Image (cartoon, rainbow, N blue to C red; front, side, top):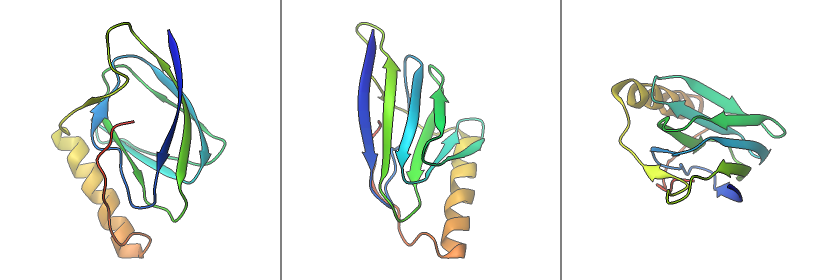
Length: 119
């Protein structure tokens, strides 16, 4: 069953590390979303671009820009499973996330990070 949901992330907030039990296909409506995946891969998505999150793939999404991130997400929901499950970061994922935050602090585009809500 498909579940359509709008996810909003304020500037400086993150989703917290999580995974989805089923495939998620989405489009970014506004803002700039930086996602870090369990293998250390970093992806930046801009308005109008599509994104896919694979089942059970741990990741975190950060809004490191000045505009609110709005995502229109299509969750391929499996009966009896939540849309998102909180998860601990992997070592590679945590290292990549620190690198993203350090770069943003160094270039002045980020002054603080808060939030912890899986979307």
